[in-house]
Amino acid sequence: MTTIKKIAIVVLSLLILTLILNFGLIFWLNKQLPMIIAKKNPTAYAITYSDLQIDLLSKNIKASRLRISPKKKQQDSLKKIGIYAKIESIEINDFKIWDVLFNNRIKANNIIITTPEVTLYKKTQHAINNSKSLGSEVVKPFEEIIMVSNVMLNKGSLKIIYTKTNKPILSVVNLGLNIDGIVITDDLLQKKVPFSYEDYAIKADSIYFRVNDTYLITAQHFQTTSNNFILKKFKLIPEYSRREFVKKLKQEKDLFTVKSELIKINNIDWGFKNEKIFFDANSVTVDKLSANIYRNKLPADDLTKKPFYSKLLRDLKFPLKVDTLAIRNSILVYEEAINFQKGPGILTFDDFNLKATHIQSGYLQKNLADVVIDIRCKFMKSSPLKLNWKFNVLDKKDQFTMHGVVSNLNTNHLSRFTKPYLNASTTGTFDELKFTIKGNDFNSYEDASLKYRDLKVTLYRKGAPEKKSKLKSALANLIVKKDSDGEIINTKANVERIPEKSFFNFLWLNIAAILKQILI
Image 1 (tube, rainbow, N blue to C red):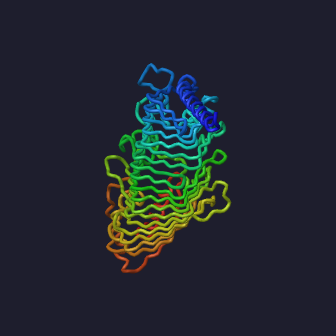
Image 2 (image 1 turned 135 degrees about the vertical axis):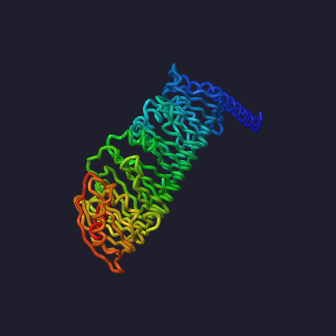
Image 3 (image 1 turned 30 degrees about the vertical axis):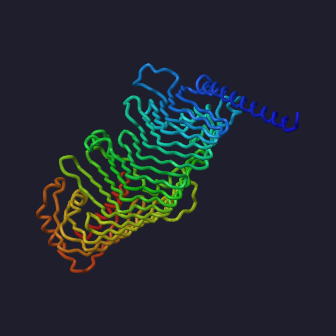
């Protein structure tokens, strides 16, 4: 036999042996994989599929039309608990044959999940009860079947349903997700985020999230990576009407309605360190914000002390830092009602633009720059307002300084607020009101100047603010000049803070004190 024939026989034998081994492995894997997924699956979930394709040369596995449901049969279909899913296909790339053969687990480089429809039924109203439940209920069961380094999810939908009401707590439509460099260990499963990763990207067409019994959040577009965050058409909406909300209250509380065209966060660095979350961002931008704050005075006063923003930041128990916050082209409305019979007093701030710098929590900090807030807007739709506000988070006296200028103000717009606080209303125009307020957690000192014209004062009876006091009003108008004749009238005032009231109530008391000194 010639050497060439011997080589040919050897090569042919090796090819035949390879084919036999290949077919043998494919046959064995076709037997083994269903057992790993079904009989040897240690999780609480049953997994079925209609088609399974295995390619040893490319080391790919593809399963089609999968179904996932709890193994334990639930007698009442209306009280489902756990995960139920339909998945068009799952493709596993570069799987390790050794782990399938000897460890009864699929280990691979990538997994591609196409068109998953996932529903999680929960006994509680919380989307995630705690970090350990995320690890034990969601990540760990499937980590026992498959371990991958990279996950890609396309055209997904996710719902979390509260079984008592059969209503969604969370709903995400057209979800896309990429996570690279995944590592899962027993230690990581106990952490807030039960795995580590190198990079991620998430996007969705729409989001619905029920925050609590009062509010829900919706958005039409969501996109985030490890560095940036974008949210479009954001809405924070009350679940109740104003009457229903007030009826449920034992104490006074604000009702918020907030909408924004765009929220964008740039250069994010966040995560958990020593079990504490940290958040750092170069900038947060909110475009076309529409915020309505409503308060009704029917419920009893909330007599707990209201901390200033400096104290709230100082007392945060985790690192937070935002270099620049910008709110642009927005509108803010505050409404306060004594009851439902009379309409609320309304303050509006149109064309609202705010820039705040050096926002940071006081956690483990010994020295911080002042928080500086600049505001430009139109008060009551027509009066230009400029405000500069400074405070230091680490100052335990909560000292602040505020400079403001209001121009071309129709004083009649203030009537619904001057009546309860000053027992007075005015007509006329403030050509320019300038003020400086230096305050702290206890009191404040104000320095102001005013130019005005066509001023008329109306005073009301004590204990009966709906009735005019004609004699007092006549005397007041004799004392107060109708016009300042282009001159600047200067005044000073002091105000004691009411600790049970908010910072903005304190600010209003300062403005009211200035007006009282000048006008009454």
